[in-house]
Image (cartoon, rainbow, N blue to C red; front, side, top):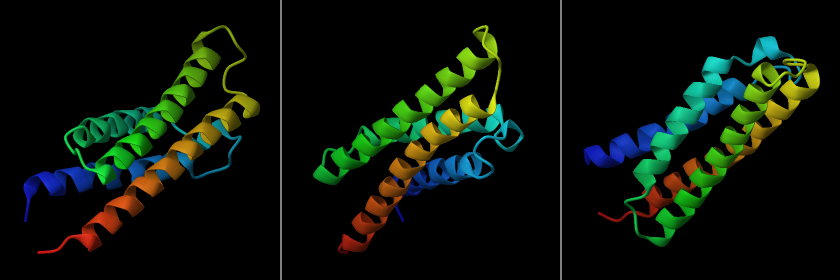
Length: 127
């Protein structure tokens, strides 16, 4: 067993599951989506992205691309949250919350693609 592959797979799957946890709930209800969970999703996705930089294969390039998309979506969601709460807006209204959760949904889809690609790559490995 390769410890690097274990850590790599761990962070990819953790990014997906944390993102799913944040995404689940009523889309416009701020009580169902916690700011610290979004923070955890952003941090774990950034770690997963850093881990993907070492792979120079075609599959590694696609995995990196999906991770960059997820990071972009999550950073946009974080910016919307910060501006809504601290930027003099009305706070987390149902509309703002729906935008944040929708952006995290895009990141969730990118993370699903990343995990599917990881599974495909694992199945294709020959010993």
